[in-house]
Image (tube, rainbow, N blue to C red; front, side):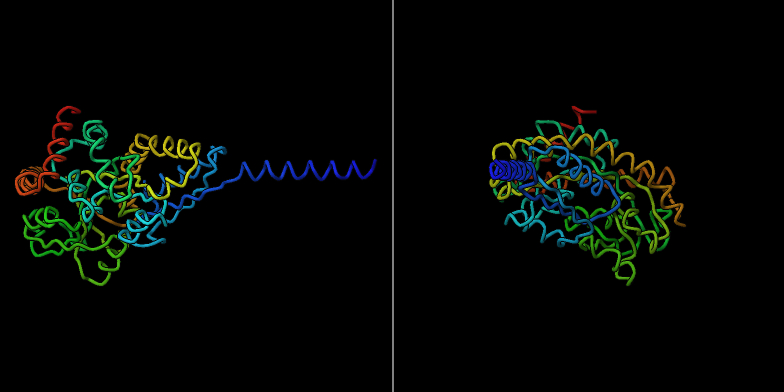
Length: 335
């Protein structure tokens, strides 16, 4: 009798252990991104919460901010190889895969963060834009808007003449370099994780990026001036490895697709909240927030607005022109 009791107890423990193992995470989703203390970091943390709450999905999320898992080009390679499951990044960094990824970077198209969000998530645009890297093994289940562009600098940029002769970090596109070149500055493409050291060494004089991301990365320790121009609105995407997604069970794939696709609106709203606090963060850390005089702000926008038509329309290949035309139509439709 006692033997049967012991065997029964052992059997019960084995069943319980088996059930516990079945409920545990059986797949890992590593999430890489180049920033920290910003909306991308918040999105990654929210993904951890959402997958932790979905026990049936069996997905454990591990996050790697500040390029801990590799610089952006290496992360893109990881997505293609299936060694990195998810990356959070502005799609403009993938112009090497498809030049049409720079289309949302066109200056002067969007009126604010939420107009940009509606435009980029309009099915007529998003349906094609999100598939630009599909043949290269990268999906885009979600797209949101990070925030507007500004210039952080070591010397104040109070008027357009102050840009002349400055070396400004930009994205590695002709359009970005031309944007600062219109005001006599030189565009210097540098990977994001190398920007702060470049500022410290004096390799560059300033950076065109988001006041939010530069605040999260504490650029104000080196650049004590930030000129808020808001000539463009930076998008950010959740980019998933299709090689990894193919390894998921049907149940896991359904859960993963649902969670990732549902992040866009939450992420844009979260980024907008970061934006509301951004200027105060810089000021609290001893930086001066600058705005151009009204006439010069208008001149700046009038000067850069045609760059989209020039580089993404007139001089672009057919694929880029198609995506750019779709975005402009969506922007009008979603005003």
